[in-house]
Length: 137
Image (cartoon, rainbow, N blue to C red; front, side):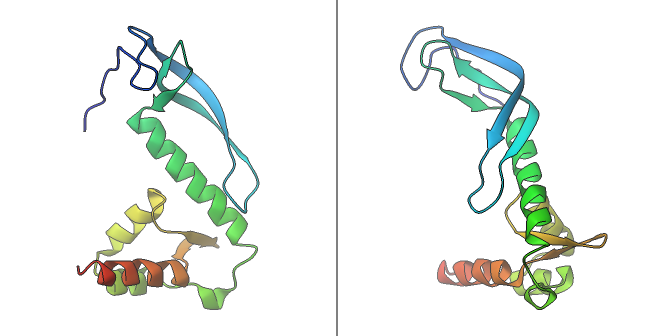
């Protein structure tokens, strides 16, 4: 997918106000978790109103780092009985093992790091399967 190069601000309508900014740092506050500072971000922002958009690479970086941050903190709260194996999650969701790992990388599937292994949270897998069935897929 290609990045759109904004010239006029789509939020406030100011002409020729969008600028590319790089090496930004942002603090994220995921609900129920401590805040996380992420640096080396880039995006396009309006000089007039300050609104803007992260680049696709920055969006992926944010999702990956937030997923890792939440997984680290969930490891202290979630017991082993609430975890599923990657193979079981793949079978239940009807995707490949690689698909499960990609979903965890993209922040679309919550997980916990146990030792050197990432294990999906069973409740999240069940919710995704239920949503898929409700949508008729």
